[in-house]
Image (cartoon, rainbow, N blue to C red; front, side, top):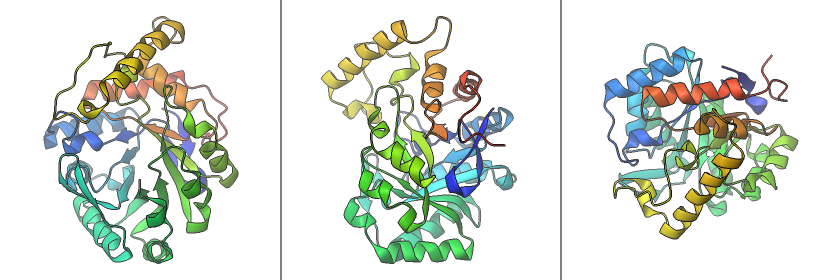
Length: 304
């Protein structure tokens, strides 16, 4: 495993982390505690030390599964979660952005994670109006001073949201999370240059393009109604899968696993600190971790 320094936080994170939306039950599978235990134990064995979750992956369900799994080894992990939404049912959420509501969410997240602090607390895909709330950021600063939050971040909803990215340092946010993968390079235009200018850590979410860059799915693939991918425009999905076929033929070296290649592709960009792919089983954790072997040395954020 390789490690990079997450912007101004000073935290050394594994270049491959663990994304955990799937543990909330919206990716076609309900997870049992023993499955999450096994996945995170294997991740630790592979040198992965970063977990990204959120309050609305289930009603704190993902957080609860993680908290139980790492309760005796909390210090070995860098844990990130998010705020701003309340889960009601699959694909059904309400927004809650007031300072008072967010602090209640934080306390609920800490309880679910069975910890008294979170390493990274992230504004979760909110509007610019919700973001431009001085009371919210003032209250979050107080939580940092109190030790309940170590660092603040912004998970931008649109991967072209330069408004929130450019103001990150103004609100004492040190990390930007953004969708970035071989099929979606929008952040390269404005978001990444702003992150580099401010020395912000960058977490690339959806690095496998919701699994389309895993190499498992071919044109004509169909997803079940309990899978978030079921809601995609069918023609758009078909076009994407045809493009993936082309990329696999023309860009992925012979004998190299496509998913591992796709993760390493993201990590080549000088702004990207870590990728946070989801994983449904131990085998996917092992594959994701192997992507680090394809990453060249000399990255500007490389940990000393």
